Amino acid sequence: MGWLDRIPLAPLVVAALLLGLAPFVPEPHLLEKLRMLSQGTLQKPIDIFDLLFHAAPTVVLILKLVRMGRQTTRR
Image (cartoon, rainbow, N blue to C red; front, top):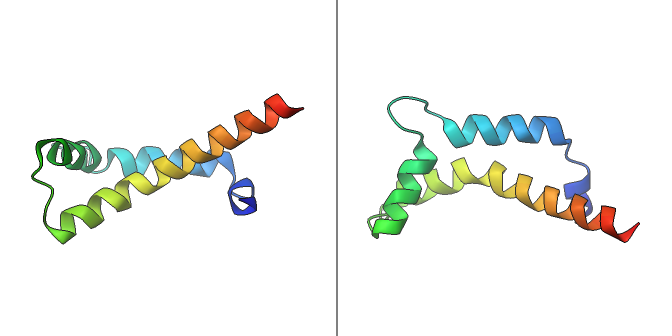
């Protein structure tokens, strides 16, 4: 997972916020797609792609933060 260590934290946070909250009006796509997933209506391929696209930076950010936390506790 060395590739994760090479990603700078600040741009990753910005990307996660921007893609996670875009579009800002009327409702962020990520919230809309997560609601569709919980209701069982996330069925169209474009909606699934949209969920993955908007959630990817947040998932990578979480992985990086977990990895950073584990490296800190090992020292």
